[in-house]
Amino acid sequence: MVQKFITYVKEQRRRIIMSLAGVIICAVSVGVFKLAALGVDPFQSLMSGLDSMIPIQFGTLYVIVNVILLLFSIFADRHNIGIATFINLFLLGYITQFTYDFLQKMIPDPSMILRVICLLIGIVVICFGSALYMTADLGVSTYDAVAIVMANKWKWGKFKYIRICTDLVCVILGCVLFVLAGNPIGKIPTIAGVGTIITAFFMGPLIDLFNVKIARPLLNSKKA
Image 1 (cartoon, one colour):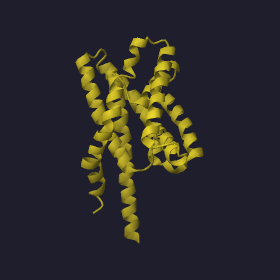
Image 2: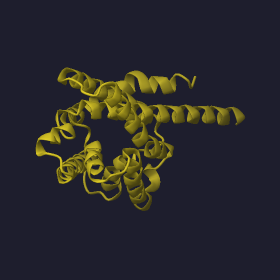
Image 3: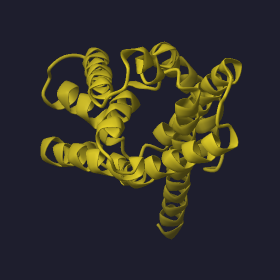
Image 4: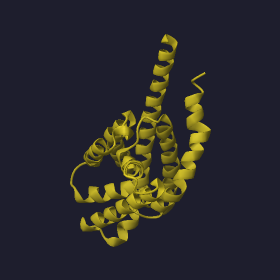
């Protein structure tokens, strides 16, 4: 019994470390996405629009938005909330902001070639971080929980279709807020562009690859 408890504690510790590492890696990748200015994932499109409208630090804004979504999850279905949810909530926004500010100081005027390179790096890095975070299985982000609740709890349809709808809503709202904040329509591709399309089609397969090749072996190799 004691040995089983020790094994359980060690496994949970590994899962927490993987969740923490995954969130940090994802946060850094979002900062790289922002430097590329060729489009970010749908939720970050919404956050970029809100960031343009609301004059507070991105990290603080990220926490506020996610607290609202967390309240939704608490009332709708607490099953999806875990340690990783709070790691994501309180760390991702501030690390993203720090990464983006740092990169902007280092590369104030990146060329198009460098922006494309940053976009490709950002995609690979966010998929790797997501694989660690998801494999740890200690809760989902507050945004992910919205579609899960609608699909599994409210039975509004299949998760993949609901997720497409929530992603579309995020992108549309983000673009509208971005323009209302005074940004020219021609700048919309910086928050909802080719990067957004690529993440929509390639994140799933890449995350699955990293899950199979790295994240799951990393977790399971320690159990022996």
